[in-house]
Length: 172
Image (cartoon, rainbow, N blue to C red; front, top):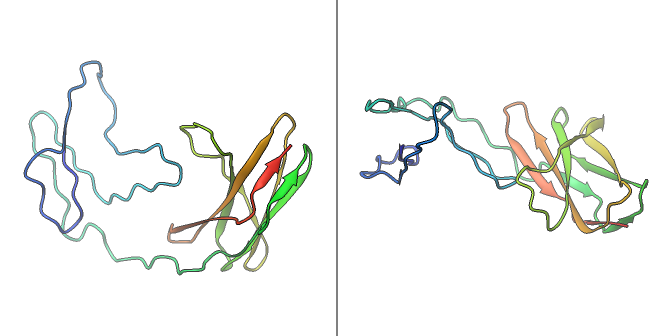
């Protein structure tokens, strides 16, 4: 396999950026991935050439009409704003204000874990127009200091905005 990647509008690199051979693979898929939670793959076009054929290139208009990114400050008044200590069975209320009609989820990120999978996202609901809320309950046999709460909102165009709450969770 030989690979070149370059930003839209720039010239194709002259040489291959990655050259590798895989002797044990007899099928599969081509794609890009990462193992960093919160990272974003931002590719608009992938062309693959096999059997000595040249990979197709994107048309000049492959990106279509630009979509405006979400405005700054989309997530406002994120709670909890201060650290909290929970015992097994106690809950934390996660809430924020934003534009109405968004899809909202939250994650609890535990410190010092070596997970290759991103944290589980739990749903939030719009309790009134533009006010989002979710709850998480501490489980028994979990002792953590400094867990982070991250919320993510997605608008109708698929744009995502993330923010981490100021308050951290200590779970005994």
